Length: 179
Image (tube, rainbow, N blue to C red; front, side, top):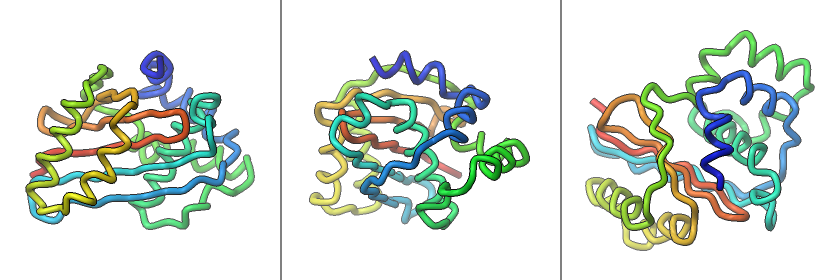
């Protein structure tokens, strides 16, 4: 279901930009996991818990907000950085297209459904390299169970970006061997 919508947005900067500049920022709970402690293997998880059924009813906007929230975390910006006038959003997204596009495009677009088992195994393997606690692993894995899990893509064969989508949450997981 969501994979068809993602095919319209991912790697399509113009479509993404149109959603982003008109986005009404929804108050949501964000969680970030940084499991890239030991070079060269690591994982990041960006989780957004939206109000009940928000994702189900507003998927495109929820996806764009999740990407922007992850970008803010990565760049160490305030989480409400997007609460700016429409004209400023448009200016930033035009002038810094390569920067913003870097967060929502993939050199290797894969766009394929993955099983819970596959994604859980990826998460556990990457977490084991950084000696992540079982409770922390389980808190991330809970977003995979019962979700539509999709591999979006990566920059090359040894890195992967996955998205796990439920009616009220989105988790974007980046994992790989980055050398």
